[in-house]
Length: 143
Ligand SMILES: [Zn+2]
Image 1: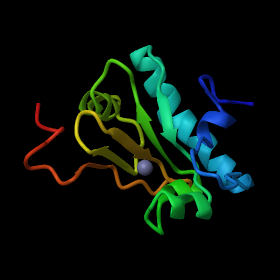
Image 2: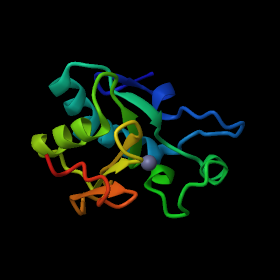
Image 3: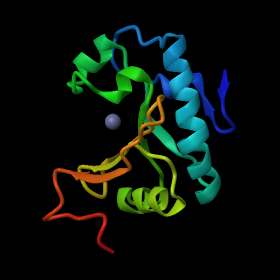
Image 4: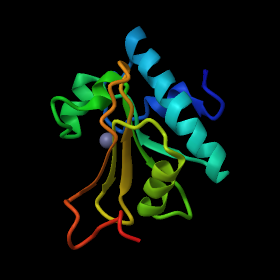
């Protein structure tokens, strides 16, 4: 099933864990919003595939991958993404430049890691741009 213009239900529920990972209706609504507000506009702007390495996570999947207990992946509000041919910093800066309504945009584990991006279903986005581990030895936000 297609979600938005460029994504599918399979991509948004991908997992390498042997556990059920089926979103409920409200989580599908959140995933649809994430695609419409963040992932599709990013894909359109860069003209390259946006690879989702982790989107929705059930409680079982989230536990198995060591996700935070309050992870927005549990609500369908977050995706971890990579774009071939772009560093994570380039992807994150593009999201910032486009002014997409993010709750959090986090460059995880440096240039060869991934970008965690979320938008809240209730629209109360914090607009946080972060790096993990914390910027210092590596700051994706300074050009
Ligand atoms: Zn994430």
